[in-house]
Image 1 (cartoon, one colour):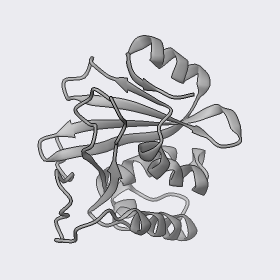
Image 2 (cartoon, rainbow, N blue to C red):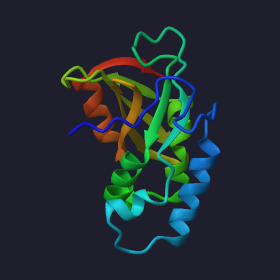
Image 3 (cartoon, one colour):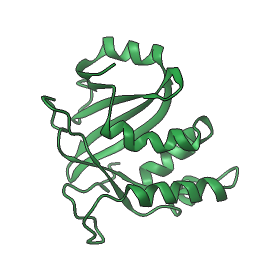
Length: 170
């Protein structure tokens, strides 16, 4: 089953034109403050707008379909990420989702998937061996984050050997 919640341009389904990262930060904070221990994916999803536009990957000389295109995340994907990984991440680590797009450390091309996709790593400040891992896929109506979690330097290094490195900044 394919979920098509992402937008291809600056216009959201609501007609608002702009990135709404502040809205997502606010909604994440409100969710974390009020969440119950066990919530279903649908219960989590109700805490968020249908879609958030987070910004663009804008890396000079990056040869990728994703460069300079808007990246967004749907409430379905947020709920799935929080359901699986919320207890593993702090509030500040969740908020790194924006910096992961703006200032990635590593971008890998995932050529083993049928969709065009990239894996992005961002180091976690003050944690030398920990990174945030994000996967972005290209869907019919835009680029969308489908995966976001905390991971180890060891896993990142393994993925760098497994996939084509498009960008690296240490």
